[in-house]
Length: 612
Image (cartoon, rainbow, N blue to C red; front, side, top):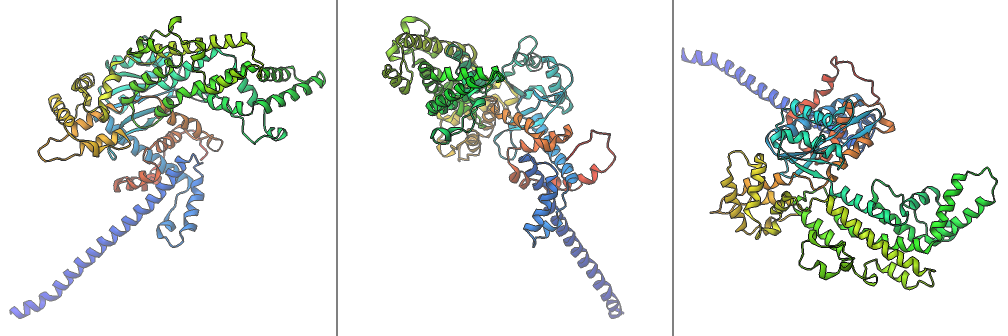
């Protein structure tokens, strides 16, 4: 009986084993299929990121899809890629939404700063919201686009604030996490009565105004230059008039650079190029002026007067002297501008660099005895007896040599005396403007130097408690002020040289990961320091994003909907770049992207027609 039962049971066991094996094979097959589909989706996402990053028409997706098939004929993934313009649009919007969701999540739980500026696009006024926060994936401070809301109505401080507040309310973002407002220095943004800042202070009393120091320096140089001859106007006129004629005068081919009045300090490069071509240009406009005078009366009087003015400017040796002086003087600002155009956090360097720039400027026209052992703000630079004699004013070696050859250069003594007088007035006006606009005495900038690891030994714990008292959101969850001060004390006693990196936020990320037996962790202190770094040192980080708004409505993209343009901008502002952004997509992200096109085909509310 047992043998019969056993015999009957064997086929059943084999059948069961077959089911299990078939089930395992099916599971492995499904897993392999899913992995393959995600690889294809990742390739399609890469195409979309490239389109956004390079400002290409979305219709480029059609050609790129064919290109990868031709380029990789042996690749099954390339063969399976199907990313037409309509699908690309859906994928771009889905990737952008994933990016915005991640950013909103960080804004709800971390300190951040918001920057904005108006961008005209036809009849609408757009206000891109650029958020500076700490990336979860890299631990570094990043600037990302949250959205590009459109303002309905006049661009008053209250209306702009309401636009920002609506985005915060819609996304459940607490105002207490907002440390700073980054903006230009227009009154509509910074006004204490009706500016955006005023309304933000009603929500977040301790919010810091991060005005753009680069704009302040730019405006200072432009304002002071009004005391000199109209060099700026001459540069613009010469560029407009003079094109491609160096070859006629046997000189090296060089492009006459265009000076943009909204970026006044570009004048340095333009003036240097003008000086290199001074004699050929003077000869050219001499001939041009003579030719115009010989023509009929039908010649445009406006054009003739422009040529006459340019020629009179170039024939004046005094004007050349001023150009030599200006070319030398604006170099003073180059180091500051270059340093603070960086996207890397540098709030900890701002105070020292502003003071250094002013100290260098004062050194060009103020006697050493008036500057010795004095804070830069206390130097009495506008008193006549503190100003250097003419022979010791820093006007540049080229201008000095030009003056030494005054007979050869046909410089009259009365013009030389006038030159020195205007140079002194220029320097005084420059310092006046900078001292009245730069935030030299702001305590936040003084305390922000605590972030600088080069000041590790002389940094004060009071700077740490200053920030924690002003911005409680800097305190990591589960940590106390006492914990942070204890970690700061431990940090000051440690050797952190091995943690130093090119970026200060990377340095502090490394410090936070230090593990030494017997020592406490510095992770929470690291988070506080990186939170401080989210406060911008200038508007350069968001200007890059703002400029992309103008670039995205190109001739090939003239009819894109606002939602599509916003999505393209969000992708372009991703600090990781296309390749790394795609590499970091999770399986759930890829699954959402795969279904994005099908979801877009479902009936949607009627929208404006767009050309992809």
